[in-house]
Image (cartoon, rainbow, N blue to C red; front, side, top):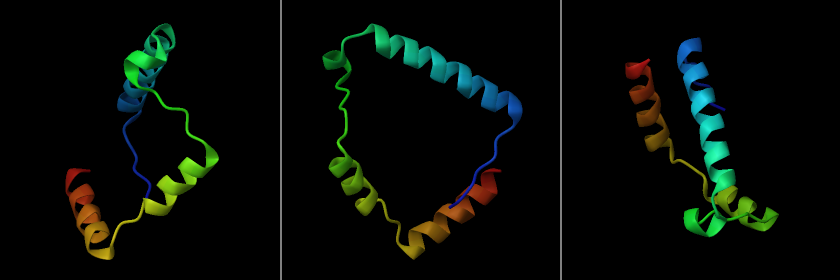
Length: 68
């Protein structure tokens, strides 16, 4: 598993935004946002398809190293 670290100030900002989005999404109807509740089978399907080939993974690691 690849771990990415962010500065505490950026983390706090992301945390506040997340809380705001949760409140907004709870107050609106699900149909408007197209929110889907995934079954275990659907999640398993996503996980099975969530694969990077070695070339793409290496490229992504290089890009992430340049930006950190």
